[in-house]
Image (cartoon, rainbow, N blue to C red; front, side):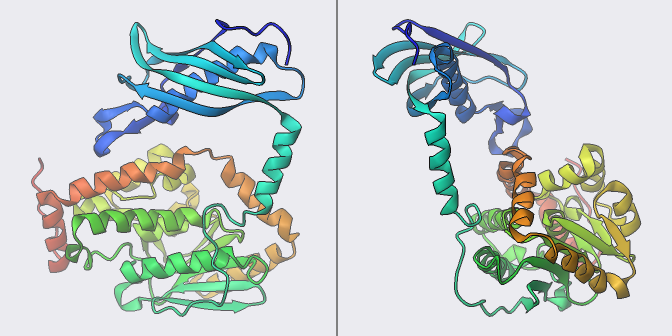
Length: 404
């Protein structure tokens, strides 16, 4: 470290509260506020700015302790300011008094400690940690492939063909299929050499009709909430798998089926396939998957799909960027294997790293947005319109919503 740092040295940083720095409380967009983690981050970054002029080449400061009280809130678009003042210097450990302000309102205050470290040593530590990690937080499951009732899994020449297998229910995702998908993802994460490419398709006429609406009335509120969060986590886990996942959309892909396709790395659809997000027609918003859908088709197209609930053809999905290729139904499996065979010719580690880095570059927001999705879904699920939507679905008639 350079000389000159002393108690009273000060750092400041200003942010505008944007979509990456807010949290929506209770699923109500009106309750969108500057989040506590981001407020803490702003104050920590202000402390980092205070130290920056005193660092030698090859040095950086890292946070080692923080104690913050959140005193007031700030809304979307607010201008906030982090302030950090050195209060104690203990060798290469520096303590700060930190505050966060919005205009003349104090939003938060507390203490923060940072340590000055060698960047090279930090890089070495990160490399060691990465060697011990297989696929993010998937908790890979070594051992033999589990036996499934709602999935069919065939492995041949390092390609796993996974077939959603509830054809009588159009492969709707129920509690059992959710559990089996969790087991499958964990197993795939632990077997990157045995399986290098995954093909995902549906048995019978449909790819996946969505979550099992018939099962839904039997679930209490908390079970429905946890199930939605688990399903969201499964599809988000697709991107952390070491294998590229190719969705072969052989028929209708609605709701959870559309999300599963969006979660795959590549999507090929049969000419007769349709894709859509019909939850609004049942009386609730999608419980997850909005971030993945929007990342593929953009906000305008995502709004059109989710607000109208109307499906689109495979050809329209191709035009919108929701799928990458459309082929005849008879050629769908063959085309999937052609692409898988080409991927198998690529260097295995480079392929895995390329997938990881592309998903990593998306940032963190899509990884947490499903929590707000689920809360909005659960809230609407308890309203009269959802009951009417379920009755109409069971009776195969148009719903008569209240309009409230």
